[in-house]
Image 1: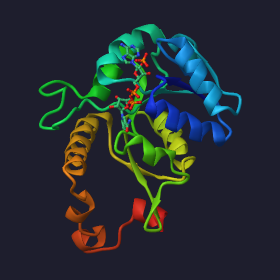
Image 2 (image 1 turned 90 degrees about the vertical axis):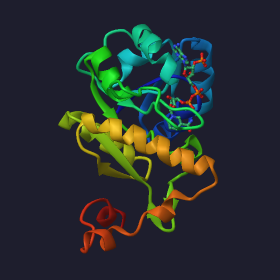
Image 3 (image 1 turned 180 degrees about the horizontal axis):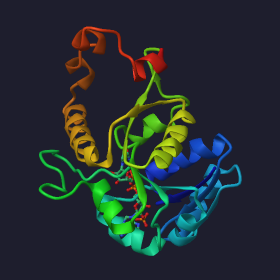
Length: 222
Ligand SMILES: NC(=O)c1ccc[n+]([C@@H]2O[C@H](COP(=O)([O-])OP(=O)(O)OC[C@H]3O[C@@H](n4cnc5c(N)ncnc54)[C@H](OP(=O)(O)O)[C@@H]3O)[C@@H](O)[C@H]2O)c1
């Protein structure tokens, strides 16, 4: 697959590296193209770096990996994205995680969809970049589940493949409207992590809650 990456920071670094290793063709773009070229050099496997526009034009899938504040700017520089598969990993949050930066407005993912007309899938926003660098991210013998929120079946299929290529398990998180919940849930979890808590302990096993065996992600995760 051809993957365009918008941004040359931590998330771009972590995900581009994994997908390039998996044999995908990666093109990284940044507002400072030199940073994208440098990251592409570290990624290797034929990855190239340059402008946001070149990266956006390149991809069968485009990853948006810039700060929440930079989204509008980055998308303007990326050029037309209508109809394209756009994976949004941005998080509209900051310490102390009491409210989202989108508070009272549409989710970050909805805003990206409205700004571009792209087929947006919210994904990869739930964990910090060191987790995405793990090959693969497996905890206690169970691969990491990655919730996906999106409306377009083809875009979701692309996102599922990109999740699977990390050694993770895609989870159906519902339509793009549910991205607001995913963004809020992530901010809540990150707040707990930063406070030194382990959010896993607040979640009983699905089999207990549902009074039956899990039928989706957990099945896949074995
Ligand atoms: N890091 C994580 O653990 C993590 C996990 C999940 C989700 N996320 C989300 O993923 C996104 C990227 O995070 P990150 O950690 O990779 O951030 P980062 O390392 O700070 O990199 C941010 C990127 O955004 C670019 N950027 C900032 N303002 C811009 C603008 N006005 N126009 C164009 N590009 C701009 C930066 O370009 P310059 O280098 O030129 O400033 C840089 O390439 C964020 O929305 C974050 O919330 C992060």
